[in-house]
Image (cartoon, rainbow, N blue to C red):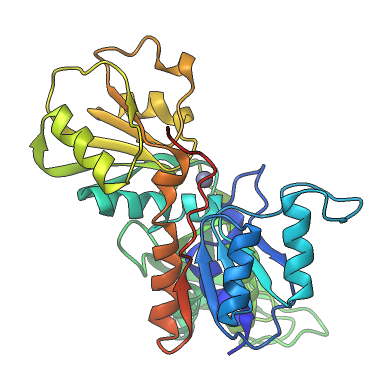
Length: 364
Ligand SMILES: [Zn+2]
């Protein structure tokens, strides 16, 4: 199997257009046409992680955090990133990273954290805006099913946990084919009336090119008519953070102690206890303090994230319990997501979670 088959499986799960503007997710180093000898899954790429891959004989390293974040004018090994780049190239290792695209994807980083905590009824805390569009097209009745199914296969019609969503209205289309055309029906030079179905369906903006390509290839008309509208609806299946419910309420101390254990936190920082039970939990892996106000608005009893700045702690006593569990600790189970995506598709492929703890922060 080629490395690019694994990369495309990861990108079907966490499409690159879902990444935030500052990010550099995707292929970091290497040529994906090579046959994959095995994949090592990690949170961060370090020299020790690359040595681990080399010792295993694996030529693919998949990380959550991108190795490369800036432009380079030279690569001489003066810092660990440059040394990793040199080591990877020298050893024919491909490095691929799924970062904020995996944070923002359904089933991504925050869903994994929610699974570890045991949350149900999950909702995205800050859904993506301006990411959906509507396609309307007009198809002869006899071809409507075929065109609709092709649009669904290309990524249209997903709303929440439903797929194949569309609205269909029968009507009549008119056209007159001019000289030099090849009309599917009707006669050149004569006004034609055709029984058509108006098909409406929804799609993510980043699927637009693929969907239009599909529509033009399957629609029977020489010049298919279609309209695209940008929607103002939030995309509730993609975005930052998660909020969900506990099966059973817990006291704040019970909950914090459980989180400390589950995520192996050396020192869990939190603000003043509110005195209320924990039922609803908002969370965001990594540096998620930017979601604090959304967490409060969601009615969550606690907000868990990897990093919270000193000043962000002020002014929320009694509003919400804030718990800071460490960046690495919050995202450490992300590699399990890579594992299950690849294992499901390629059951016999050599795959291993890195055994190296790349957390650069130690607790005294
Ligand atoms: Zn992170």
